[in-house]
Length: 101
Image: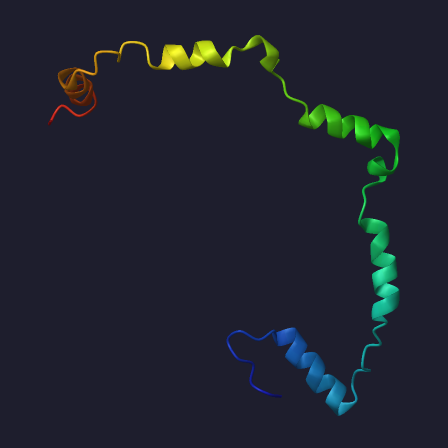
């Protein structure tokens, strides 16, 4: 038996040896047939029905009605209190976060 390297598969090496000695038959692989059979698994059964489309819509629909949110008002609130741009105010905030400053 050949010595299996650290990254090789022991079972594969063993199968190769058994095929060489005639203890095992070489497997027959029909790639085209396997590929055709695999196509049945490419789409979930629910996706072949109208239920799949409905489930996808429910799963991806937003839970928040963004028409009620005013982007303009959020932007003005974000800058509220910084109109004077006093560096001391920012230093005070930094000291709240890191007292060693």
